[in-house]
Length: 236
Ligand code: URA
Image (cartoon, rainbow, N blue to C red; front, side):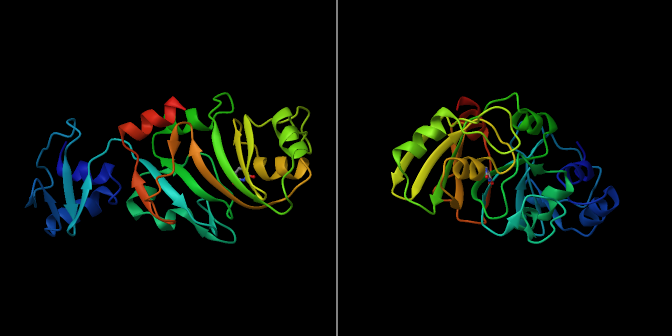
């Protein structure tokens, strides 16, 4: 693939902008500045790295990312009242079409996946695909056995005809609930907690499938999701 196409597919602007970056000697590849936009490089080994303005990037056919979402950010591309999660990422990701894999509410924190692989996004957001998601909620009132049992047995959410049941519901302490759900309906966890007779004061996503939010990833920070992470996601 030529250098112009490498930059273009990785989200560094229009073809004309990519050509200009290269012509201005702002791009290095294989350790050396390259000013030839038509120079060819093999991208299929998975090991190609390039730099733009001294910042190194791997070439990835598709981007799979993991973000530790802080509170106060909307997953929408066109946020109404808050900042946008894309403002936490380098701009080339939005440019290459990265989108959120399912949404978290603006006040929900924790594990958020993003990708520009449409098939992957569809697979993981399809209601048919039951992927367990572990949430940790802080509740307003103390948890009790009746609430936990109701969550496990199923609670009827407003406007729904069938009860929604948690795969697991456990109290970590008096006001901390660990809840695993398979579906991703609108405000699902908050509505389930309300339907069980309590109220959700704060919500955090710890895990999707077998993929846990890495303890080393600070709120607001992102990282690439590698093959091990993708396998863990599917294994859950
Ligand atoms: N359930 C909710 O209520 N909110 C979220 O952000 C995610 C799951």
